[in-house]
Length: 370
Image 1 (tube, helix red, strand yellow):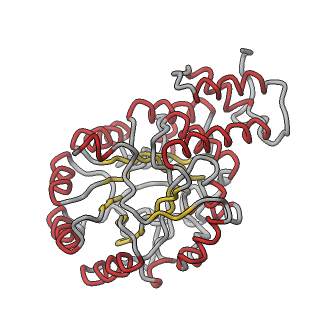
Image 2: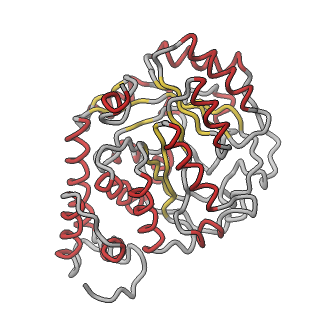
């Protein structure tokens, strides 16, 4: 290997590269389950060309198909609050952003959304929101028990931020099956650059390991294209995923929001983000990896195309329409395509894939936990 002096993804817009043999050799090692070094990951991320990316996508799709065939798991996404006390410099619902359209979903509205999703056939509900102190653990436990009493075999996923071990345990005991908590960046330096002082790097990681110990199906993840992000930062993300071994991985591009402190930055790229999706698939072959909504912002049918690059989950938004534009963590979120499952089924079917409305647990979960 040569000494690396160039920036991350420096060759990705080139069709081919003089480094392709080495890049593909690293991809092949990942396919075989070899624990490649940080240096090799940095090399790959620096010198991967467009043709190399195509090769990577083919390998990622093969591995995904080995475990999940042509299935694309559906989750019903419900956003319950855009209040948030946190200081994430990139986020449009951060407590640092002045908004006059904050909302909180009451129990009746939540259950109406749940009922509509269940009627459409969804068997997993993903309840997401900012870190809103209104939704105490006591209140959330009440909500969860209400849902589980009515839909005892359905899966419930929460994405409500950092909590104590005891709070996570109570929610798990009430019936929550999965928890999504992106680590955002595994580089402490970069993490601190994009968060305010209330966000503690070590606390974020600790929460994820707490969730694993309790017994959740856990989701971690990160953004691609952050200001000052390096190949070494992204290598740290992949190595952290390998260490944590989450059941779910959410990877999306950083997209600028013009009301945040990072409004003058540039957004991440589609190709670069899907390269990281594919690498996550190689590192965690059995993981559930959503094709995130943000990918559809960068490229038409961006989410659907990601399903051939390692992703295998879609999360259509079933929140009330009035709330959709208010949950604006980044600009230009796509909503309309999420509303018609028939249209989504056609688009996915044209790619040789099929929508799967089942509980969609990670491969082997039932056997491990029966």
